[in-house]
Amino acid sequence: LNDRLAEIQKDLNQGLKEIENMHEYYWENYTEMDQYGYEDYDNQQALLQQVNANRDKSKLMKRLEKMIDSPFFGRVDFLFEAEEEEEPFYIGIGNFGERAGMTPLIYDWRAPVSSLFYDFDKGEAFYEAPSGVIKGEVVSKWQYKIRGGKMIYGFESDVKIDDEILKHELGNNGDVKLKNIVRTIQKEQKCNHPKYEG
Image 1 (cartoon, one colour):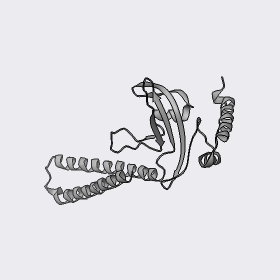
Image 2 (cartoon, one colour):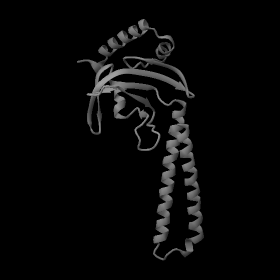
Image 3 (cartoon, rainbow, N blue to C red):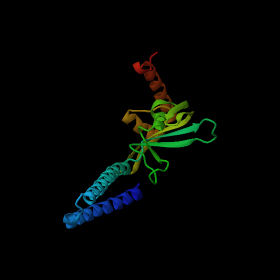
């Protein structure tokens, strides 16, 4: 993340310098531009394009700065149908890959694959990708709390747990007995929740 952030900062600085150069060129040559305004129009479009690119890079930097503090909060190990080895999917506040266009190392919590974390316990599962429904099995689910780039806790759980105190206890010293109690209570709560009733 730090390397990617430094790279984007460098690009942003170059973009700002480019905007400065465009402004300077525009004002130095404004009176000499062609009478129909084509050069004037082209310069304005190039300037607008660079401003938009810088705005997008600035938004990306802000998101990555947040991700440095807490890069991800969940993980799902998913075994794709007809595969032999599960694949881990880390879930965070945004996508992050080493380069744009590469497979993310961290998936945005709104990405289709992230529904495995929110909507399924261990066992058979699926998610809807742009290419169609992807089926398989949730092998394990993990929840994490990371602050200031440091792991506060991490624990494996069959179901997503929302209670902060309980998450902290499970992350610190959650024994098997405590985890089984939590699993039983949560399944009962899920059965009694209006969303899950027949």
